[in-house]
Structure formats: structure tokens, C-alpha cells
Amino acid sequence: MNTSKIPFINSILHLTDFSAASEKAFAHALAIALYRQTEFTILNVGSHRSLESRWQHLPAVRETLERWNLLEKNSPRSAVFEKLGISVKKAATSAIGTTSAILDYVGGNPVDLIVLATEGREGLPRWLKHSKAEAVSRASNALTLFVPSHGREFVEAETGEIFLERILIPIDYQPSPTAALVFAMRAAQMFGPVETVEIMLLHIGSDNAALNLDLPESPIWDFRKEVRQGDTVEEIITAANQFSANAIIMTTAGREGVFDILYGSTAEQVVRKSPCPLLAVPQSWSK
Image (cartoon, rainbow, N blue to C red; front, side, top):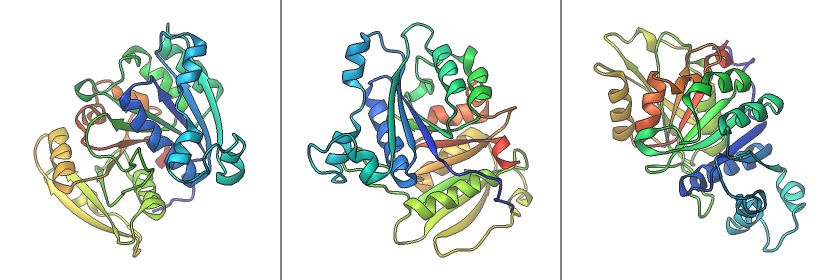
């Protein structure tokens, strides 16, 4: 398995609309930014508040890091970078044409990972319009982490503690699962417990040939393979619940493979029902 061309995450964009669900997504974005010491941008979307009010309500990075006992109380703004190595930027879009504004922002400010909250049965946040989804995908070509408003999480918002013990990766012949496997192993190295992280490779079909993969061995992770038959989406969700997965990682098909998953595809349907955060990996990252 050739992993040399798969890049690391060096920049993160968190999209927030000030909802409670966005707070959970913010915690995941900030925790990943800390571990990777990345550029971290918080972009307010879909708000009808005044610009001044929105600046006041953007997630407070320093206060959160103080609550997580990573900074002393009343630390200066410079301490976030000087002590923890992350560069923070905040921005806001207009309430009208929000998706187009996201498209413009991402087009001019490329990022490696986009983190956003999902909202139950609808899956997509109300401000993300399907008609612009593919265009945003082509502009970003980024990983996307969808954090559900309800269900398991791998970052505790109040403490910043990370629990990543079990990862589920749906596997098929196409698209290639290489990048999804790489990010699962990297996550196990960064966020895993003292014990081994279990990584379940799940194939929905009548044979197990798709699971004949060149998998590196390590005491950090333990691969297990499972074949199921039935409806693809339902079997993925059932497996995630039975496995008590902390995260699902899926390679997405399509020209660029990020937001194009959000219009009727298998991954979009899994996003709607997922009991845990889902990382969508563009197919192009596996090439």
C-alpha cells in the first residue's frame, strides 16, 4: 500500500452557525488542530446577526483551551501560537448566499480539512444548499469531518479529552480505500489509547475479495475484517452501532469527492444516520 503521496492535515476550517451542534464540531476541529499544530480558521455561516454580534459569538479558542487546562487563565492571545503552535483566524460570511460565500472563501483559502456539524435526519446543515455542493467540492478538494449533533463523539467538548478506540472503514473495490486506511492509522497514532485501536474493515457484498489488502502491522492498531450482506447504508450504520465505533472513515467517489457525496450517494445517506463522526476522504487523495 503506497502511502507516500497522501498529505498530512496542515490546515483546518471549521464552519459554525452558533448552534449547540456546532459547539461539538468546534471541539473536534480544535483538538485536531492542537495535535497537528495547524492553521485553524473559524468561519461563521448562515447567521442573520450583525457582524459585530457575530464576532462576539464566534467560538472562543483561548477560553476553551483554558477550560481544557492547556493555557493559564487570562492568557494573552499570542499564547495560543507561542505555547501550543496553532495559528487561529476568524471570518464571517453574509447571511444571504451563504453557500456561495463558502465557495468563494474556500476557493481563495484552500484547506486540508473542513469540520462541520450535521443535524439528525436532514444530515446537511440548513445553510448548505445541495445545488452548490459539487462546486464547493471542486473548489476545496478537502477532507470533511461531519460531527453529528447527537451520538458518540471522539472529543469531549468540556475537557478536550479524546477517546478513539474503534474506527469503522467501509471497503469496496472502488473507490480505493487507501487514503481512508492511512488516515485511520494516523488517527490511531495521534489519538489512540494506551491499548490498541481496533479498525474494522467492512465489506457489504457476497465475497471477501475486496478485503484482500496489504495492511501494515503495528502494536498501535489491530485490523479486523467483516463481510455482510444487505442494504449498504443500513449495514454500515448497524455495524457502527454494534462495534461502538468512535468514527467512520469513508472514501468518497466523484470527480473531487467531498461535498459531491452530499447529494443522494451512499456516503450522504450514512452522514444522515451516522451515530458518530464521519470523515469523508476524497477519492483523489488515494491516487
